[in-house]
Length: 423
Image (cartoon, rainbow, N blue to C red; front, side, top):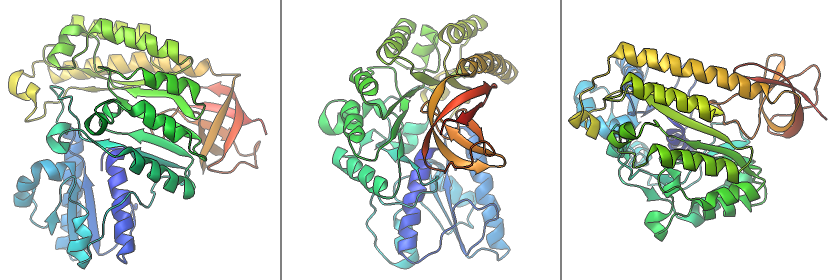
């Protein structure tokens, strides 16, 4: 359940379980087997509810004799372990966010040292690469630090060894992920080292694409822009969550950045990396947000024209600064109405951004075959969240999944691009 960071943990656990002699199925449409492990998400209300429902589904299967053992791990378990033990006692054992490697020891009595080795559940040509855990930013609304703790970077050489290992397994594309990747290295090396890490990754033979997720605007490491501009295999793509633009709201959110600083950063990113596609996440309905504040946010999106954008309505999370100090004073109906207006605006911008690509040539990677189409992506598209490129199989019978090809965009709609191969 949950984000790509959880996916990496699941892939590492699958490797350990297989080494211990188990046959493992990941997310089958129909769950089968004697043992179930649920890796939970605890980020926002909907995600927590989804995780609880999944645990209950397997708890019922255990009560009915269709399951021998049930284990739970991950963020929800880390944060609410005592409550879950009381409410869902059918679970054999709960693990947190970081002690899950003990599961194999508890099952088999085997003490296996965790490593970067894992079994990929993504298509074999791309992988998620987690470079750190935790976050020191302490935004007012965010419960993630309550589950993951302080920022902890992985040693650079260990990450580079993992990249080489994955390249040897056939991986060509890396989605670099962290709760907050721009702080990478500050705890180990006393400076932000994300630019150095990415540059060294880019120099590894076999690395075709590197894509960066979850940057933070405050103290942004500008040297990273030079690396993105100079290294052809570093995608001109940056996922940087901004949340809002109104300075008073940003102050209440404890984002430690202002409207003016945000605008300067966006301008600098686009000047230093021509053609970059920016993905951001915005929040509506934060405590104290007025209609005027929201209109300022709408104007910001209208002017900035983010190539990629997601948004969500504020959800009060217990234990956070906002939950303790602010009244959740924006009605739910107003939150939803603002969210709908914001996403409608972005839908139009996205359609225009896609339309501008018609007639142009792009390098794409083919992810899969689906019906009459090869489904591919450009460097500007992260798996599962961004537009895809659909290439008719009848016109391009020789394409293979996992390979890169030049294509010409023939048409576009709000969500996808259509193309023909130039082979």
